[in-house]
Each structure stands twice: as C-alpha cells, then as structure tokens.
Image 1 (cartoon, each protein chain N blue to C red):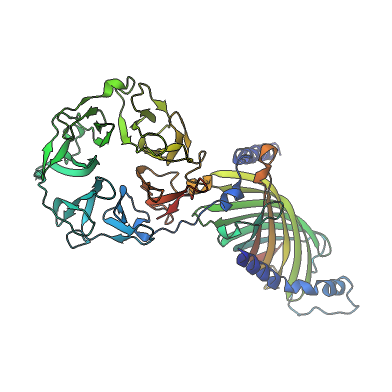
Image 2: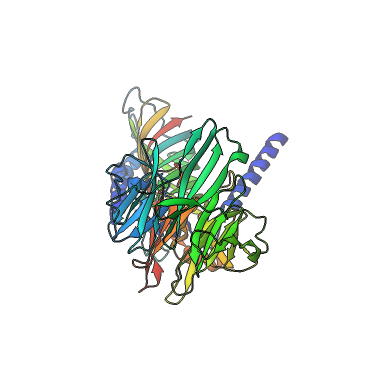
Length: 213
Length: 389
C-alpha cells in the first residue's frame, strides 16, 4: 500500500527538481542587466510576455498516491493499478511569466477486481513560467471540478492539482518536456451519505508538448 | 452571434444533464474501490463457461468443456482424465448421491462417440452404461445433450431435432437410468421446442420440469408422475426457466420454480413472487446468520438484455446482489464479478461453508471467470465475498 505512494512521490520530486532553481532564475529573468544577450543566438526570445498564449497536450502515467477517509485513515490505494492520463490546456499570459488558463484532462486506473476508474477534471489554472534557454520551467496550480465514472456509477466533486514541468524549446513554436502533478480528488457526499467521503490522490507524470501561439 | 449563443446554451444544457445523471450521492466510488477483491482465478475458467460444480470426497469438481478438479482447500485446478485421456469434450457432468458416497456421471464425446462415464472417486472411470442409439440421418438427428440427477438417480435429456433448424421438429425427452440402461420416462412429454429444466427431489417427491411442464411423483423412474402445475395457479401458460429444491440449513429447504418472466414460486405457493425483469434460473440456500438462511436466485438473459447475476434475500423479499450484498460482501465485488453473467448453477458445500456460482462470463475481459466462490465464516457471521476460482 505504501509502495505506490512512495514511488509516486519520488517520481514527482525527481521531475520537479528543476523548480529548485526557480527563485534565483526568476529574479534574474525579472531584472536583466543592461546589454545582456540571449543564451543562444537562434533561441526564441520569448520571455512569456503579457498577451502571449500557449496550448499544451500531454499524455502519461497516472500513479495512485493515496486513498483515505477525510480523517486520513488510508486504505485501498493498492486496489488501484497504474493508469494513464491525457490533458489539453490553454494558457494566456497576463503578466510577465504569469499565465492563467484552463485545463481538461482524463485519466484511467484499473482496479484489482478488473474494473476501472475514469476521472475527468476540468479546471482553471495559474502558472508561473521562467526560462533558462533552451529550457523552460513552470509551476502550476489548478482548481476546478471533476467527473468520475466507476462501474456505471458517477460522482462529481471539487478538484485541485499542483506541480510543474521542465521543457526544451525545440523550435520557436514548440517546447517538449516532462510534467509532474499531484491530483487531489476529494469525493464528497451530503446528507446521510457523508460516510462515503474519501480523499484520493494521484501523481500524473507525463510527456508534454507546448505550442506557443 | 445568435447561433453561437444557441450552440453554447445547448452545450451547457447537455453538459449539465450529463453531470446531473452521472452523479449518485448514495454511491461511494472510492469506497467501492476499497471494497474490491483481486480476481485472479485459474486460467481453466478464464472467459470459460462453467455449467456445474459439486464435491465428491475430498475434491471439488467443475464442468467446462472438460471436467476439472481440485483438492478441497487447494487453489490449483486441473483437468480430470476420463478413460485415460484429457482429450475429450464434456457435454454434461453431475453428481448423483451425496458428497461422501456419490457417483459422478459424465456425458463425454471422444472421437465422435458419445458415452456416459461414471466414477465413484474421480480417478477410475467406466463406460458400462447403455445409452440409447444416437442417430444422424439426413437432416434428422437424435442425441443426448444433458444429464440431471436427483436423490441419487440419474437422468438424461434426449434431443431430437432437424438440422435445418425447424423448431417444430425439436423435441426433448427424459430418460431414467434403470440399472445400466436408460429408459424413456413416457409420462413426461414436453411439447415441441420445450427443453427440459431438470429433475429435483425433496420431501418424498421427484419433480420433473421442462419449459412447459411441471410433473411430480414418488417414483424415481417417473412412472407415477403427474402434472403438478395445478398447484401453481398462475404458473400455467408461463415458461419455466429453472427448478431447484434447496437443502435446508437453519431453516427448511424448499422447492423453487422460476419462470422466464422473472417470477419465482416457492413450495406449494399458488402465486409467485415477481423478482426480476429477466428469466430466473436456479436457487440455492445459504447461511445468513446462526439461525437464519437466505437464498440466491440466478438470472439468465432475454434476447440482447443481459443477465444481471443473481438476486439475494428471502422469498418475497429478494433484491439484486449489488443491493443485498451479504454473500458478495460489497457491491463493487458483485459488480466486478457476476453482475452481468447468466447463472447456470450454484453449489453450497456445508462442510466448508462455501458457495460456488457457475456462470457464463463471456469473453469481453480476461478478468472474467466462469467459477467464483464465497466462504461463510460462522464466527463472524460474514461471507468472504466472491473470489475467482
């Protein structure tokens, strides 16, 4: 039960290592010294200025991280198998490096009984981007709702996601990279059914392509 | 702009509808996941229909296209060699008699020849019974395609049919094993295209059922059998889809007659109980507590409407197995195992307090199996939930 959680968190930490340079790089990007040159002569010079837009596509693994009651009594995460996810996102820069946007995703996880859990979140995102050409980095937070289907039953609820990614600016228009996000999927019921409340968590690790409009 | 607005409005309504119909506040998705059990059964039953299961001595047996066995308490099933080979096609297998001193009868085709083999230990098989001649002449054929047992007696279903598919030429006959030969039960004559449902025994009577007839009598050979359908006033005209005589545990066993319109009749009750919208098949009685029992009533399919597993409860108060979940343990176990499968047979072993369910799992998933079991723990008064064998 603990193994998938530990593995998921380790992968997430590994993929988020580039973010450790966020603070220093952010300061450097925000206040360039007069006369600085681009890191590479043919690299795109986009510093994620206001008005720029991006769309992103991703596909990857969906790793069950935890499953518990709202009192954090964890049980049953091992009943979920490694799954797959995909997403489609749009971002619009409202300030230098700061974007808002939307994200639609879907994820499948098989179960030990041969069933599957499908979760489709839809949310608003806020991201901060910075660059160390030819690499780009981002941290992102998302809030929205999700729809889950399981054995012909469904539930909708609030959804939170946090994480980041590192990308290589392959062409002036395209960046390719890796992302890792932690999904918080609370299942909340009302009335006489609050004993069904659960908190599920997944780590999405995916390959992403970002198109700079 | 107006068109775009309408499209947006329609999309919003569609999305809202999907969300509204998708949400069931009374169902816990992740509680269901937490309640699942791993279903890693033997490959012998993966995507394979199991038609019957029983126990003889220290072994369990399950009939697929072959006869399979495992030692009680073991988890490994293997194919039983009949007449020295596992290269045969099993049409039907039953246990006549009780689990300690019964006889297994197997209707087996080997090399184009059909014989009835018998064994008292599952290891040594003999084919010394005389089965009436089976014929294939032009488009007409007469074969034996199923075995039944009741109170230690053996019966065979004879099936005459026209290979062109004319249902009017399809007739079923019942044959009783008298000594080493099968004799026709003349008193029991179903109409054309009305297959047999089985023979059961209880309270001193043998009950013979086909899709259109229900007879009973005290003689095993059916010589005094007469129609018992008058005891069930609203059964007349219905299609019988299953017959069972359950063994009592804490409470007495009873005769159950099931119909294709989802009704169940118990004992001599003149009126039935409407249970399902699909045909019911067989019934088994299992423990519910130290002092009470419950029954499981299997279902079949109608046309393209799939079966729905089984109903659970007491007569007159049965609910689908995802609602009454005592034997399945959780709704998610019921739904991830038998919930869409036709049920062919139940078998309850009172010694190991284990119930088996024999199903047609279809071929849509490698996690579907033809045989599941659930174990009753008297100490906790709980079932273990279905696990694939």
